[in-house]
Image (cartoon, rainbow, N blue to C red; front, side):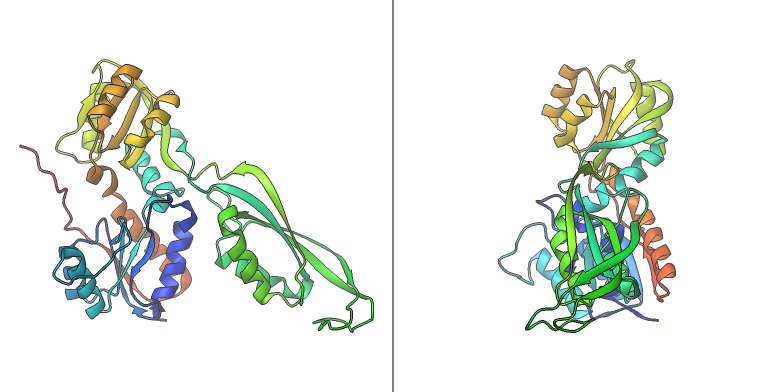
Length: 372
């Protein structure tokens, strides 16, 4: 069965929920029509002109990138500008472009977990929680014979996610009563007659940022004229989602020795190191991409070393004062390894969904920096 862009948007939003994106970010469908068919998918780090041109030449229908095509609102599309040429190419060849950025950084199994996996870290925890990790519990009351429709709607919106598990609910049975008044149009029972119905109570966790959309969607498939539901605020947060990670090495290493091992593991020509090369490192904080904003969190985590990209002069000085080692592996070096993993995730989801599409990772991207 040939899929559409809309079906892939649902797959990708399930993989990396948009609610996990930072407020300044722009994730999701960047260019395209949700009704376009998708037979071939490519994954890449950046929607560069050469990547988009090659995708168009190879009849790719959907390009999934980590970095967004549009970071900020645009005032005009000039086809003589680099951004305008990309938009013109994509639209003329019906190439949809989708971005999963900081939401893919934060989600369990995303960029940061791929990075710590390559580093061999153990007992990993989140360094900094995502922008919207607060949860609530939604309880919906529905006739027992209509449970499936409600569950299908909840799961399609990614409600019921707990760490690495999805579709998590609790259900119990009971009896509901109601007396339809004048002007009511009851789906069950008659006006003026007290009615008893075998009902199920469905409980499910929902992110606060998703609550309104989830409730509105459930109301559309619920049989009752007035849907009965409860919302309970919770003090818990999604503990497995967030920016950065903290973990332990299998055995302590001196900072310089750890940097050399990391350089080999990520296949990098060079890394930048701040700190005493003999500093013993056991606990490591990590943030893919540009991680200077999480340096304070890295120091507070108790890590002896912090690994990230785009770490500048002032970050280096702050790290020296805090007595923590820094290893700058570069923005590209910390993130490009997710391109193959993202392709594998999408390939598995396509197979599980029963749709037909080929998925490949772009293998021509290079670091914009070179070293002399």
